[in-house]
Amino acid sequence: LRAMKWDKSEKDFLKALDLGADPGKIYIHLSRVKFFNEDFFGLKEIYLKMLDLAKKQGNKKAVKVLEKNIHGAERLQRWKNEEEKLRQEEEKLHLPRVQIQTNKGNLEILLFQREAPNTVAHFLDLVSKKFYDGTRFHFGVLNFLIQGGDPYTKDQIPYNDGKGHCGFAIPKELGPPFRRNFRGTIGMVPWKKYGGSCQFYLNYVPNFQLDGKYIVFGRITKGFEVLKKLRKGDIIQTIVTLHQGGKDTAEKENPHKKTKIKRIPIS
Image (cartoon, rainbow, N blue to C red; front, side, top):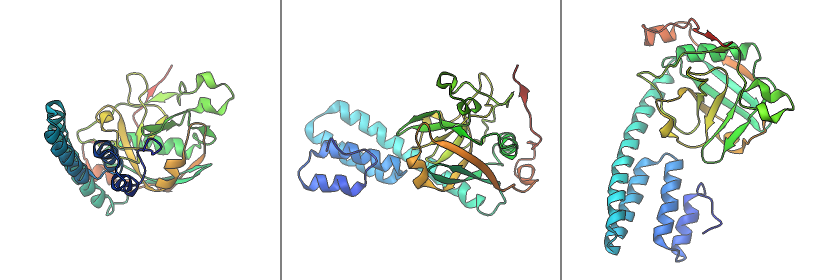
């Protein structure tokens, strides 16, 4: 059991359960698998089993925590339902798409032009200028996220990695509405008090603790297997625009927002 990683297949843990492993420990690992796969209904079912076990053991502290976790899983499922509805709507729209080409493979990204039109326009402008070509992912934590887009990673000086910018910062676009940090979403790394400059992150797993703090401006539609392989030091060979998006998409969906890029010079 100790040799298993928490993103292993659910079947691995069920097999361990059949072999007589401690149900309490197995349920903890299964809850992580359910969360990783965004199966929040299944997560609630696991918590219910853990709650039943805690009641039988007379563990009042665990009972209190698990009852709270069950309500949390229900909230996560509501968020997922909202996200799925948005994704269905997006399939009918001509939203921008880019392909991030790395040494590990390619990621196709759909950009949230409706919710973050300024951020998307800024990102696409950097892509058109080949700004990201040859940069590296300079920060990565498994079961959290990986970060890239810093021009300083092109040199051979590691101590300045993560400190670079593009000469401009952009305002925060945190809604409402805003998109949540589901697995495979891409977000803008803030620059000081601003919404960001050029660095971005990709979520290995759901990171809802970042919601409302960082601008989520897209999601992976192809290449999840590549995301799992990406590590610190991997190279962004180039980013290409697959579809520019309808010029009036953002205005039609959010008339109060404009696609003209708003930027703040960084001295």
